[in-house]
Image 1 (tube, rainbow, N blue to C red):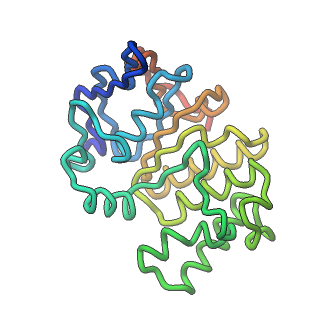
Image 2 (tube, rainbow, N blue to C red):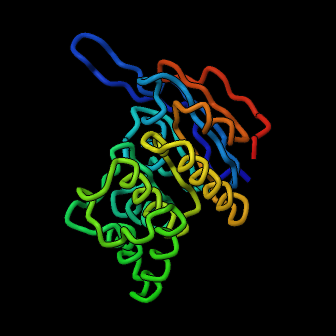
Length: 231
């Protein structure tokens, strides 16, 4: 069964007299439990594709289905519910709430989901330790380095146990050791809980972890290959 089916996706942007092709007739099927990397230069369409799948960007044309449900036809409330309960996002800009601590940022989605305070605290402590932020739970984003903020964003995305994780350059500010640790954690979630991962990256080291590598250029898929992951 395919977790995600994208059919003939088109998204164009007007920039002066030029038309920028965000997505130019992209069609993909992504099986449940896949571990996929999207590669390509800046402006190739990677982020636009992630945002379209997550219901953050509207399309000019095309269809997106997740587990048989047409995402492109959902209203705002239904999209918000889908994102809340089924999709974890790791944004390139982190999108942390500046007035909240690392723990509070991680707990935020769970709080909206109605998870009890005790379980939120237990889960947030566990995940922050796993991403290497034990002892920093009470620091606000401004008190954390870029790499540490990135790890808080990752922890927030996966702590609510989503079925699908959409990650935009999740290792951009991480050193090699932290990158390896993060990717190993992603892989464990993928294998033990069948979480589907779609990761946009420029990092060749990250690509080596993927079972499938999709390359994009000018809003199009230019190659789509299975590969033997290093882990």
